[in-house]
Image (cartoon, rainbow, N blue to C red; front, side):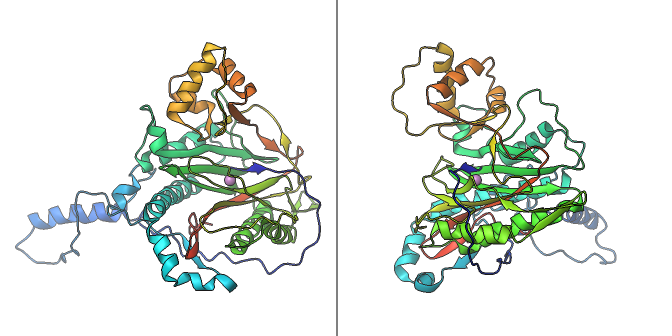
Length: 439
Ligand SMILES: [Co+2]
């Protein structure tokens, strides 16, 4: 999910070459052997029946547990906690710190700090594995002709199934599930669009769609996004943004200054151009969107990571969690609010507010019990059985209790793309927790 920032003056900056995506996978391949296992089991039964005679069937390697599903289904329905019963979820991409922080990798004190944070890491790795499995299924199956509603619900249902929390019982959304709504922003819209009830928008062959969704386990939110396009003419736009995000991820680390990271991101992003309909467009970093820190149950912390060069001297520190996200555009490189709001989140720092409207009071009660400060969308209120809540919701927004996050769009006719990873600034290493074989 994107954070908005004031515009900064654009300046030139010298940079390193774009980082190559390293990708140790994180996403271990345990989701493709479903059929094999089923076939093995069937073979076992038949083999037993036909036993005694020729032993042409070799004995299969022994399995630890027969009952626990060892593979994911299509579409994904098996909780990852069943696929990794000992809670040993795949690690993300672990990157050693550089320069003055190189000592950290092996330092005893830093390793101890890491160990006492084991639950934090386990929750984060579980959420990341859910994100990878759900998004990779989405990448394999999303096609033009589908409605945005079915695409969003498919992703959200996948997240709920794989975290093992449907989020319908009171408070269940807070245990694990959606970290924020599934954004499906098309073409000139860069962020914060998801269909509201009744929306009939259909994905088109010529569209460029940003898929940005969050998964949380115990409030540990993985914020990661990718862009889908079906026409090769957009390849350079997507490549620019993917490279820019990877450059930002590579630059991030303890003591790194966010303004400098922004300069590196911009340099990589703006080294690309894209030809559409005979016109060549420079790819621009969208200068009023930023990456951001992530806090427990809160998607936007206090630090921002610009995607253009800036004088912001803020340093990344041990223990920080950052969403590194970059947006490229063939348009103005600047977004404005546009269209109907779908995304909301309760403000964490509001004191007692006197709400006169009873519908606002009761809706706030629903939000408190189900989402806390986690972002939600109107469809999430619908599925909890709420109706006629718009007046109450708007009055919560006007009272400053709830923040609205309208769609953010560049100029009409332009195309925007986004890639995003969540990184943990661990005491010993930087972990790109959402890294997968896809991006
Ligand atoms: Co984000």
